[in-house]
Image (cartoon, rainbow, N blue to C red; front, side, top):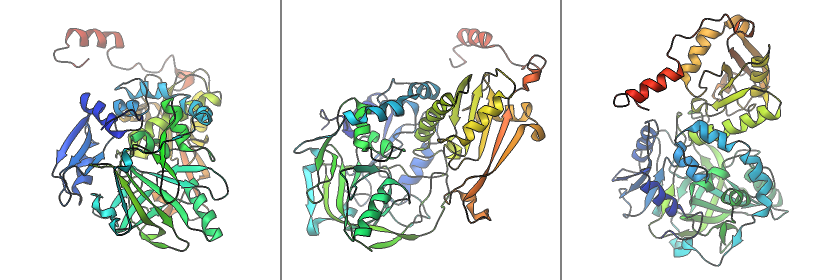
Amino acid sequence: MAGGNPLDLRAWLAKMEESGNLQGIRGAHWRFELGAISELNVKREGHSALLFDEIPDYPAGYRVLTCTTSSPYRLASILRGPLTNDHHELVRWLRGKPKAWESQAKAFDPVAVETGPVFEHVDAGDAVDVLKFPAPLWHEADGGRYIGTGCAVVTKDYDSDWINVGTYRVMVHDANHVGLDMVSGKHGHIQYQKYMAAGKPFPVCIVIGADPLCYLISGIEVPYGICEFNYIGAVLGEPVQVVRGELTGLPFPAAAEIVLEGWIHPGDTRLEGPFGEFHGYYQAGAKPAPVVTVERVYHRRNPIIVGSPPAKPPNDYSYSKAVMRSALLLDALEAAGVPGVTSVWAHEIGGARMLTVASIQQRYAGHARQCGHILSQCGVGAYMGRYTIVVDDDIDPSNLSEVMWAVATRSDPERDIDIIRNAMGSKNDPMSVAYTSKAMYSSRAIIDACRPFDHLQDFPPVAEASPELREEVRRRWSSILPL
């Protein structure tokens, strides 16, 4: 039923199937198997997105989609960029794009339409049953079934017209109640607090399935006061088509797969969690979180849940975070006036935050240290940082084997590791259990793994074939060597 709506998930899936980027799986169980299969899949080279069907206990056609953003080709397609299998090419294309999209967002107000595929089924009253959908129990230690992972939560400011769309995890409590975990300080939580202070119910619409661009953008740091639907419109180059909920009047994509609409009533909380975090740990146990009383369920025929569960990296969404953050870090280094930066990579294994690497063409004494300190402490890189490494431009910063070779052979622990103390910390840091300060401080290590600038001419040469020879040999022996 793909139509002309640019946020129609099914149109995107058709493109992925045609390009060999979608694999169907039948019969996997919602209890653990969907999560484990997705977790193992994302660690394979050249893996596809997974579309699960014929899930036990559920009608055929009630599906779950995972691994949407975990390859350069699929992520480029989602961002409407040039299709590529090279993540460095994708990062280069992305440079400057977030700022441009942000500045253009005001010109792309969403357009309200009367109806859309999401209204093919409308459940109200006693017919509301969130568990009619195959919400997965993703991992063995999870506190419940999470229907919302690759989701987009639509809320409205109490004292303005600002609509916010954020990605917050959603745990199923029962047929018409779900837990909504909004981290303190996030825009949705700020809006929630205003309603609670006024003693008013907080209106919520939870988009459980749509084009992955929807949850990708709702999961990044869009500035306060800007609606993510506007930002998505800037990415698309055309306004998002939205319909409005029957109860709250909140907008959501007309081609959404599943939408839960309801209210968080003042004081209504239940234990939520535990659930994994982006860094691969269960950071906290069960804790009280707001509860949405679901009063309407809208869904398409044969609906699709978009899942993106956290796990030990690489996980379902760690690649997209690595690409987006790498582009932002490159922009930050350029804005700070650091020359000669050839590439940056925010490694998935560090949740795209705790291990970042930059490669530079050294131009002056202190260049590598300058780059490392700015990369570590700029606005994009400061939160939950840990290790920052600077390497020469013959090293691919995304190749951990090459990076650690540079660390092992081009750095000396005493002279080439700088420590920053009392940097920005976080309660979400798994090492916070070892912090002794009440304030959330943590340290940073900056490793200069470049050849010493005053020994560039006499540093031992690398024992390997030249790029020209490698290319010639690959061309001649293409039958046994990959191009």
